[in-house]
Image (cartoon, rainbow, N blue to C red; front, side, top):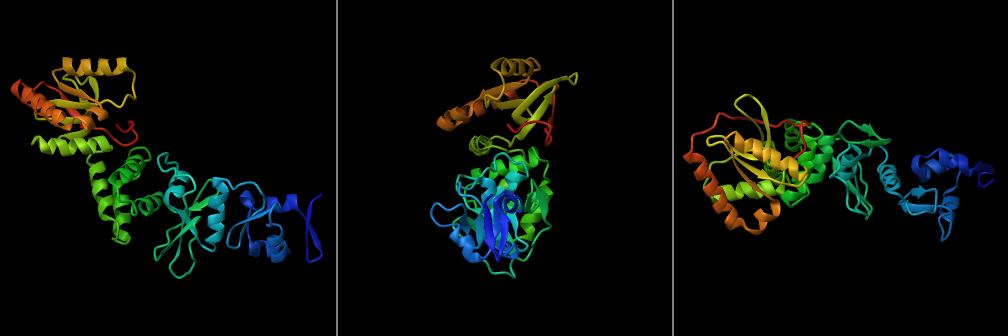
Length: 326
């Protein structure tokens, strides 16, 4: 039986491993169990059974650390009182698009009354607004709105921010008011772009393509459309969702993301057209590659829609959780 001798006591390693989630331990914790620091470091030598993966933090194993082990190590490093935030926290809250790039540092939040240096593996953020901790899959994390804001505040590209805000609101039901309040409560540095993108997402613009279309609509000097609407016929029959909707002339723009079978898209366009809606179908790559042509198509479609009698159709906004983002 493998043991670790400490202060005259032999500790079975299998029992020692079971004391620490993900086999991550702080030096102080090992010392409390009678493991001298010299013994712990000796076990971390080349080809040894342990690893020191952060200052004062040990992995009780010699395999490359998993993502869960690095997150646990970052939390151990940030003790006492440290919380997980940023993309790793969002991932634990269930957000798909939040998955961090490989080998990206784990972001932790600590009180501004503490002094702790970051490392290449751990990004340390100090704050005077420590939130209430939440437990997610065995890890202590900040609430989702704090994790979201801590993530997007450092981004300089709106298309890094938009998918995160879109998923948070439309798939996880996070209130825009809660996100806005978190932006207001924090440092104003780096908040201007997230505020702008949040306003666009609340207005219905959920994708990079829709943001580009909004710009091209302005170039075409057309009225601003409503985004991501549901259209109903005169008899209240559901005709389907559309990407953009000009209610004054009952015109729809449908950006096909190839998420549905071709036959489904054809049937939906047929139902809209039969109800008198002018439908302009397109794909993201066509808009990006032929912007001038798309502007002309928008103008022509709107002029045609305005020239005929408006059909008796209605449209209403899609709601979070009720459908996937277009």
